[in-house]
Image (cartoon, rainbow over the protein chains, first blue to last red):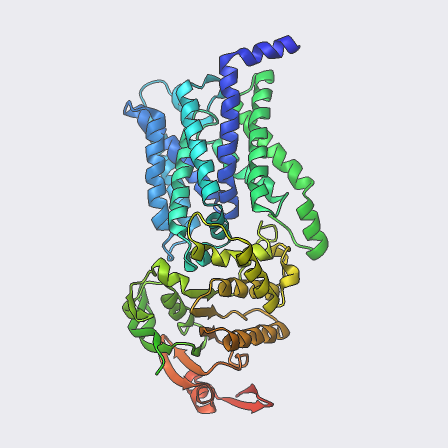
Length: 282
Length: 258
């Protein structure tokens, strides 16, 4: 058994997949903290569909799909930021419109794609076991930049997560940080098209943060718990997919949901709040 | 004569066809305490948002003697504290009361500098002043509405502003907590060199130290002067278009309708 496992880990695609699990888990989970605490899950949906739509367009025009996915993500981030700052439109409505438009573009692209659609479909759910060295390099750089961003601007991030309006009013460069965050979301999502895909990534942009919300009041631990749960979901999902010969992206999402369910059931915060005030946490 | 710290000239705010503020001219002197009072929809919050830099406007605004656009520069924002209406915070949100107060100083510290012992001590002192120091390690979302509002007030003072804007900070608080909160505002006015603008629609619950009232109605200033004249039977009845009588007993103001 041990020899078999050693043989498995010596296999290059498995090594890459494990590294990708670690990077994908960390990058998506860190972003999910923002998605959950800023109550903007639709940002995750819009960005993941932007990456997907961009990649399909890339295939249509013979451009590297991950590069085109990244560019469309950046454009989406550039549009979303200023529009969501408009006070006369609810951000949820804007994101809903963007999300449906991007999905329309993606399926339009797939409809007129003359070549085989298998590669385009792969972009939806990714494949941990067929990653290239470049995929890993890009993911490493994006994850490192995201972690550096969180470490350098942690106090500003805390202030903005609490209230964008109050942070801005008290001299914090909230728009700069918020826009940087949107661009980083685009980078994380598009660099993860190859790992979990443009559709399934949404689960990793929500569930690790939602898991941390059940477990801690400390923002630093919140990031750590989220990252551990995201990496846990990716690694366990990969193992399950390998053992039972299942699609890796789908397995990761199911493991991530299971981890959230366990955290929800055993949440010490939920019990304390219920005992003290009879309230609920979402 | 005191320096004009806020000066608005012919300020107009429109949202589509609706005119929210219609030709507002207003000057506030340093260390003055001004109440911005009026019925719902009078434009009180919009006026405060224009001063804070949250709302686009037409006209001219001078703050600290400098002409301002609709957005404030970082330097100006540091000098303006803002206390919103009661905020809804998720009970599970990961921020403690002390951390909330500390966020007030983040803008002043600037990027790449973290709050140290001195800032923490200052935050605890402010929480003591607001009588919420015993709640320092409690999650903000689990505090009562009044406690939370006191923490938000401490946060605004932590910023060390020259102007403190308060947008109906006592709305939705019960009467006892409202009175406690107003006493804190009186203390702040007495002990800190601050210019205060306090928006409210409830003129039965006003801080004692408020010197001047600006009554707004339908986006226009209906009255600007001392608080006693503002709250007289004639002025209020004219403003609301309904007979309202005010009387004072033991230094407290009571209102009788109809």
